[in-house]
Every structure is written in C-alpha cells, then in structure tokens.
Length: 326
Image 1 (cartoon, one colour):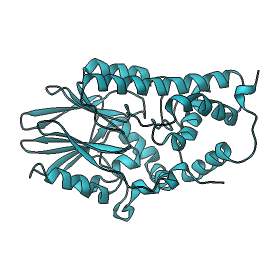
Image 2 (cartoon, one colour):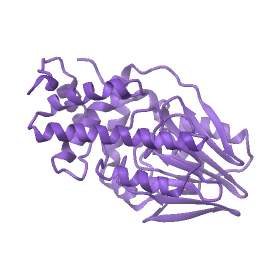
Image 3 (cartoon, helix red, strand yellow):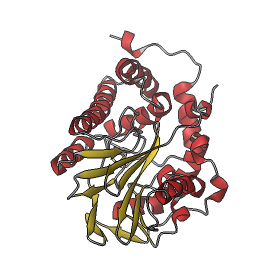
Image 4 (cartoon, one colour):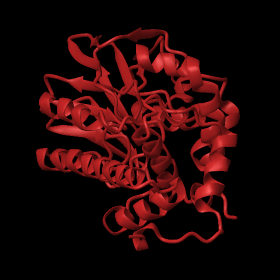
C-alpha cells in the first residue's frame, strides 16, 4: 500500500513575501504553511513560527531585508508542530499562545510532533535543528494586546475551528488579520483536530472584525475585501459540506470507510484541485465521523494511529461505493 499522500510531495515551493501595509508582511509558500510579520518601533512580531529553526532562518532573512529590528515576540495560532517547532530560531523573548493551545501542547504536543513529521517529511527539512517542544512563555484566555511602540496588535482566541485553541492576530487600525488555519485559500483545510460544529461561528467572528486584508494559514495573501470574503466563504463551504456529508452517512449507519469514499467522491469535483486534498481527506473524514458520533474532544493522533487510519481508508481491499447504496 502507498504511504501518506504527502510523502510523494517533494517539490520545493516558491516563497512570496508580500507587503500588506507599512511594516506588515505575509510569508507564503504555494500552499505550505504561512507566517505573518509585524514590524514596530521597538521590535518585530512573527505570527506562526514554521516547522523548524532551519526554515525559520529563511523567514528571518526576509525580515532582515526590510528592517534591522529584532524579532521580540512569536505568536502561535495553534499547537500543530508544523506551526510551532521553529520558534527557537527567532531568538524572541516571548512566545505567546492561548491558554487552550498551551493545554493542548501539554496533552498531545509530543504525539503531534512525532505524527506530523512522519506524515509530511518535506515540511520538516532541517528537523535536526528542533530542540524539542515549543512552550509558550505567555498565555491568555481571550485577548491579549501586543504593543510595538505605538503600534497595537491583538492576539485573540477567536473560537474553536481548526483546533480548540485557534488564535488570530488582528491589527485594528490597519484592518489586517493574520488568521492562522481558521481560514485557507485554495488549500484544503486540515480538519483532523477540528471542531466542525463551531467553525461557522468562528468564521462569523472573523467577519465581524471586518478585515480588509488577510493572511490565511495556507494559500496566497488576500489583499482585497473581495478576496477576504472569498477565502472565508470557501473555507466555510468546504468544512460545512464535508461535515454535512459525513453526518448523512453516520445517520444511515454506514461504516467509516464507506463514508470516506462517499465524501471524497462528493467533494472532489469542487475541491479536489486544492493543494493537499488527498493528504487531508482521510484525517478530515475520520474526525468528522467522530464528531458526528458524539466525540466532541478530538482524539489524539499518534504515528501509530495515523498509519492504522491510512491503511483502513486507503487500503486496496474492495469496498462497495456508498453512493450506489439505496
């Protein structure tokens, strides 16, 4: 049986470093994880640290090209290894996360690190530079103001969506939002640790902020109100369509593998061209199946569980198409 879909994804991605406004930048990489940069009078904030200190060095190089100020704070949008394990590469005096994100690192950070490195090795190039888990130096319950001289950024635990601890960084004066993986653009949302029932309300909370520019977790920077609206709408369409389809299968009493094949067939015509679709869908349907069945706190993914799930859903044994059933 073939390994994870991501193990064949070995091509290097082109990096873009887009200016969103004075001192505001988006580091994006053709569907790989994004970072945000905020330059203030007395330092720089990085939103999402990348997967390894080695990759963080590339982000640092882009920052050095636009300012001689040092990175003083790193904000983690959530706990996933691909977002946080590069934090030590910035030399920041503060690493900031929501209380809920810190609790998830305590509960499952080590398992998540081992799981993610095994699933998507290219994203962890230079993994020998990772010193271990990234621990926040500061955490907050709902909102935390970050001051860089007179420039204000707000770290907001916006709600449950991609994870239980999702944090966005909002620039209220500039109306720019660094959204983490609550929003994607042209990239498949990873939902293996999601809260599907809560995701629409979290997106409404983002809309209520009124962002005019937005950096999604994956995909290009959104530089117009129309693009922002599209990114929000597309993310909601994907997550809501997936969850509704899985709920239908659960209500019919179908097995997980039947629901998986049915859901992939249903969604591929509209979303199958998005990056990492084939990689994400087994994890996404598995989590949706759990939530539809009443498991509200996502189960922990381990390297062993990853393989067991992948073999069960992507194995070669024949299965009757759920779509053909009465």
